[in-house]
Length: 313
Image (tube, rainbow, N blue to C red; front, side, top):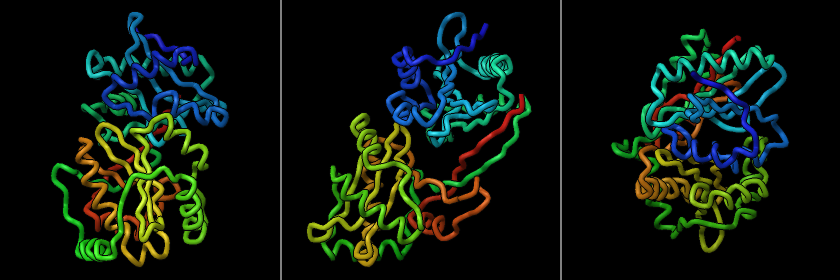
């Protein structure tokens, strides 16, 4: 019999152990990552027990009568162990969770399953159980991903750019100059996109300090000056790039071609199967940034999906 309980902050150790032993969880689902912005979200994460044994956890927050796959995370449905959690168990978990939500006054579940590229072993039983309960797909965004076991080559323009960057003497290294990079990143986002980083520099530094092996800043320098960079999130299966930026000099010298060529090698060294550039869509997937997705595809990436489901209770 499956029992659903709301997570309590005193259970952080039990929660993190479940995440680390799951086949589809990543460090983003550990409490040190989830709780850095706990003041912005009313945590309502769920824990599923079978005969007293924890079998799955669901990172979530509550917004009135909505239960949402945690809004502070890009992805995160039920996180399941490799053993003793097949489709029959997930059906029982979803049945019990739906009943718990109704009794708690929750009328709708917004659910973001973990994309398959992050799975250490197949883990899509939750999507099947959602469909059986009548859930509808309400958002579909496209990311761009390279399979590092059989990568497609960069296009001719990026190969030429790489040679130009090498001739100019650019170098790529890990960096701890988060403040310097955030200043450059913020200027580029403001000037080119009228936007700002989601994280403040203090937040990203705190997350890096909590997960130094998973969150890494890389900088491209020219004559000692930072001209480009990226923040990498490393999980067991995926090297995910975000906060990519290049100064005007960096763009002229094709710094990003060198940066990504270096990072593909580093991702393989770390044992990642995939390199993911992130989504290229806006307005819940309805607007495709054609230039951005083409830029990523020229580096060898192709499409993978990030999906959101809605379940009326």
